[in-house]
Image (cartoon, rainbow, N blue to C red; front, side, top):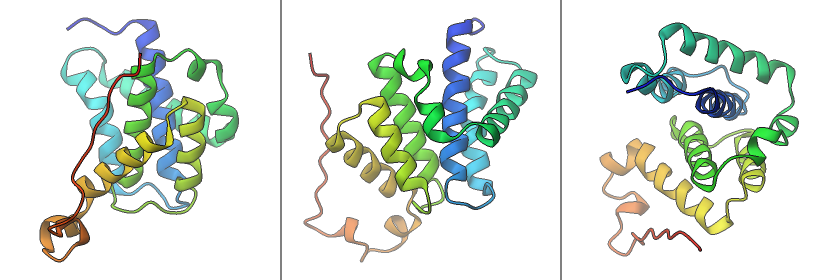
Length: 166
């Protein structure tokens, strides 16, 4: 694969900062599973030869700097978010939800930051709810290990339907 364009790097850096914001919104230091999620997000670009290890390190360092100096509301009001294509908006939101729920808990400021992000990205509420439900099931250790978990109930709804609105 080829190296990423400046535009692509901007979107990846933007998304990395969003992930750092939402992972830190619970008020705790970044947990190992959250760090691993961040590295998984960026690692695929290294594996495909699109980013170097030094670019990944710089991207993470820049994200940490941004979240330490720029309020979340200001960051999501940036020009970058307004220039995202619909699929990019959805991908940013999906990655943010996955990052928040990687530790199986949506805590602290994560709920309010995800809601602010949802609005800024113009993701409709039903889509956002479906995405959260998917990642709650995906990241819940209890679903796999507890046959009495509500998701394992015989009548638990198991539908997810997304369509592109023209």
